[in-house]
Image (tube, rainbow, N blue to C red; front, side, top):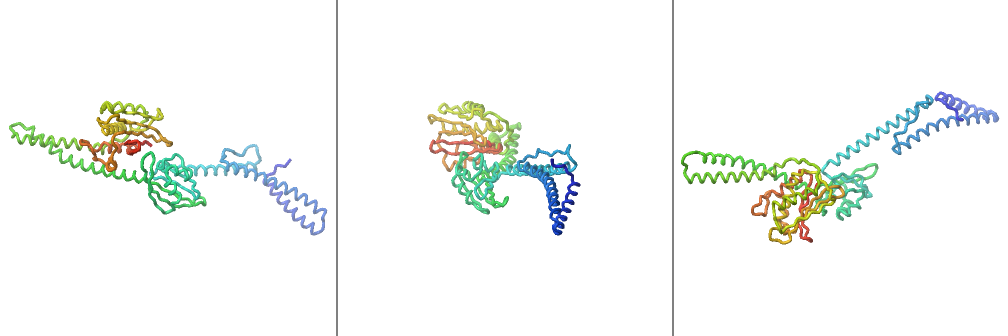
Length: 439
């Protein structure tokens, strides 16, 4: 049985071992080989004892690092019912383990913190190594590319061959623009590359920005500011005129008939202009969304009934296709009601009362990222390209009595809801399709 030894024993044994070493050398020098051989065996025995003591603690250290390599920080060396020296060694090793565990935990927390920041920005981030492996992506990049998971650039082939090629050849410091088609329509991206070395490997960081979305938001903000200024100035100018004409008309006494008629025209025109301006104020004063969860199928069926009641058209059939049937969406139901009713009304007006077999289809589904899409399509006359470009511009209308703000308000509601409203034309099926997307 190997004897238990303490630290002072080891010091003593080291001294004796050193003494035996010197004695063996001296005996060999004096040609006392028999005694030298005996001392050599004693020297080997002492070396064996010291080596076993060394290996005992080394095995503990090796086991500790093996456990850390396997992310096992739960183990602890016993600090009770053991010698003072073993207790001291075990406590030291336990402390080292806890320090390393704390450092690892802090590193993981920092990584989650940085990942949260990256996922909070409106710019897509893709980090690629020299072999095309995707080291990191954020939610915005996956949304822009229309993917649920991205682990290698080869997966981009199913997005677009041009996108796949660009991600392979773009170099740090370069900036490119690229467009491709997906279920959301035409996506135009600005791609900027920068380089960095990570763990000795050369990495490329690609920053993706949706050009169309940025342009739409800036344009919409400009229209909102312009509308607020115009409505404010018009109201300030017209309201006093209307008020004054009403006051003069209410005066008792004989008023010249021609003057009265003129005042009545001023008053009615002013009130009509005020109503007109109030209508446009709706575009800039949409209430903040109060989102809740609701079933899409129940919601769409209710919208169908309302549309058929308000805009009765016997020649038009509204079809519903919801997959899955229990599909739910997180949005402000009251605001989305305004959007969907407006789209259904526009679809009915586009088909008209003369076209036979008019069909409006409301289709809802979700993609791999759990984004919900509601498509409203109709088989009426297709929207000309030159009109489709301006269809979401405030005050643009092709209708004789249209206000030109219905689609603008609808897009603004979707924007405030964190989603999008887009238009695309399916030439092969002769369909006009408006798509609501809820991320």
